[in-house]
Length: 289
Ligand code: AMP
Ligand code: MG
Image 1: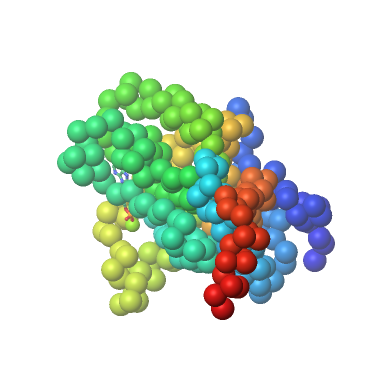
Image 2: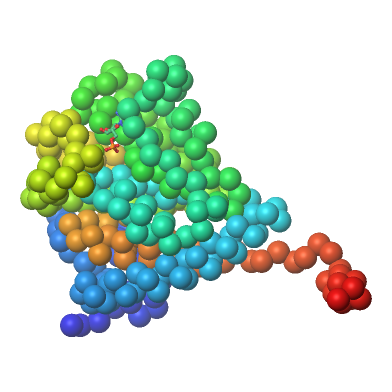
């Protein structure tokens, strides 16, 4: 298998998966079974994901430690994608390799009555990661321009205004030390069909099935269009979208792990210098041993 040029410097998956800000996104042009940048097939991918997980965990600890000492930076992974695209699977298989104490994971469902009384970003602001944390959104504020658009949950003019509000919001996050990693899990309708069938056929998967998913599937092209609009309008240099082909679970996990790793490496968090006299503390300890 030819080695992908993107693997050479090890930091280029971002460049490979990033949707270029300002360009119109057409999802039909992307193969959901593709494996851009992968180190090989499934076996090599799984092995590399395990390696990436260990590296991520080490960097996460440094980010956390720096956060304790006043470094305000944090990471926010935003996961969007159709039902069964693997948002929950990513949390389990990628984020599951990190220290849960430093993670803040939020799944956004249909807004509660209280949430509906506030503007659409209210519940999102409350779920943001604190200094040193890695925040994960399983669905996000984007639902308010995705499902809201497909199901006409708000007036068109209101939905139209949200793209700009999202861009302003994300810019202010970026300026405030949040590294945004926005991943769109790109799934084919054929693969979704297979996954939904599995959910119905396997008793241990049935709890994940929601008959409403069939409505979403019936409006596949409306969903795709809503995604194309959101991906086009809300991809900025400070908060680009990454399109992650998601028909192959091993690739999805590998790619999102790598994307996180590349961002954390760039952040390069440092263990803080101790705020006490190490030599003196050592002496005091040894005196009583
Ligand atoms: P799941 O992620 O499978 O647990 O499903 C969550 C459901 O909540 C999905 O059907 C989403 O479309 C829906 N949802 C999430 N956010 C919103 C929102 N802001 N407005 C309406 N529905 C939403
Ligand atoms: Mg669901």
